[in-house]
Image (cartoon, rainbow, N blue to C red; front, top):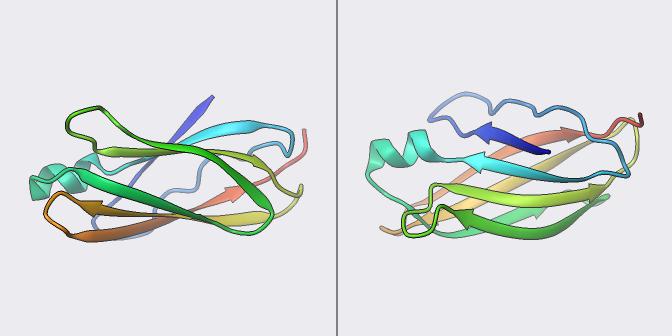
Length: 107
């Protein structure tokens, strides 16, 4: 299951649904509203993941004019919350960062 978080121009980014420690879950940071307003696309994307979660493969999409960044996350300790940040550089060199909180809950 993929969880999509929409980056906002201002205000906090929504907290996604909880994940189980055994799950390997795909998360997407959707930068479309911001990038469409700026007329820009993602040139590069870097994720920072708080210790305790395991970061897997990360990508940007769609091909040609990327506006979303994705990462796979696994592990974590039940009952903990982890900050996950996404920093992008746009095709004009602008650097933007947003973060989300991933809650881990055993099921």
